[in-house]
Length: 183
Image 1 (cartoon, rainbow, N blue to C red):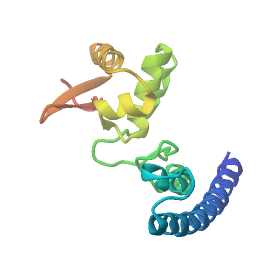
Image 2: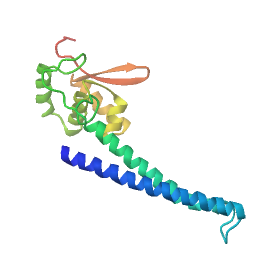
Image 3: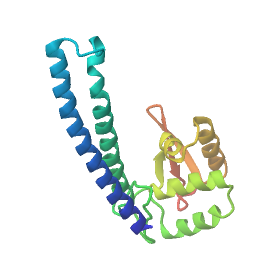
Image 4: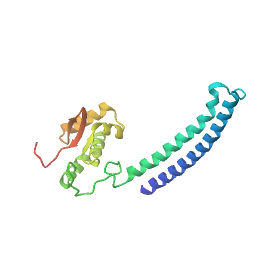
């Protein structure tokens, strides 16, 4: 998995750099052409706004190259084990931080995960991997769920006593219930 990601990163960076180089070269040629056409006001049938058509391809290639490089950088950040908010993050057993899962509660959540339906299991795993606390909109965005689906799943998990929802400035924070405290 790690080798596949590093190969994908390298491919994206190389492809992005090549496309950026080609786009920059074409942009230079297009600017020279536009300058030439603007000087003579018209070149064949290319008059008026059509003068700027040579810029479209070069700008499109520059945008594609930038997107490829940004995608490679994003993959680097997600796959980094030191990144506590990345999707590839797995908390080591026994790590105790404020608002996170402890050993006893991780064993409990591990056994509960096996019993949950797929959608609820994915949401609960995401909350656990996020350190035990995450905004509801992040669940919706990162798991590709609709707003209503996310709300229903979080509500069901709350009814089962696995999470609690805290409202802060109009946003819902989904937080794992602390098993050491009696509610």
